[in-house]
Image (tube, rainbow, N blue to C red; front, side, top):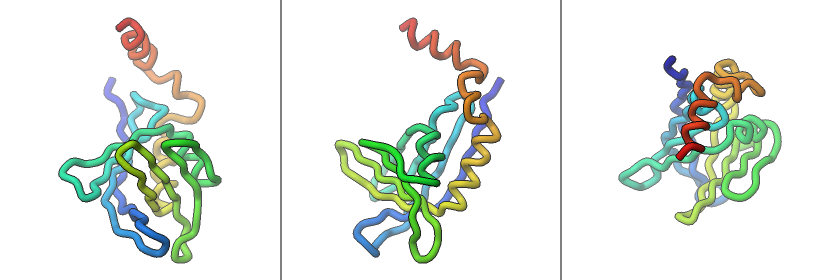
Length: 137
């Protein structure tokens, strides 16, 4: 069986300073064969895209209230009178504060939640086989 892929292209804002941001094209991705994770790919002044992967639950919660610690933090906010989701990403290579339109992120998340409802992630076909193969190495 082939996994279901839920993707959405959208424009994020890379916040450089209070009141100053630049547009960044991004791709949100979700795969039913990796049901706990969301993937974000974007370009920021580099030849190769930047990929981030973190828990879907973190993004779902972050649409409503501040959450996360360490490398990924997500929280709702207002910018220019509209609802946004802020994502603070930290790595040894640097830090980024990204702003995404809350309505677009929420609509995409709803599609992922229809594909794999919360609490049913462990019941996805092939997940146990994948874990057994990983642990056997």
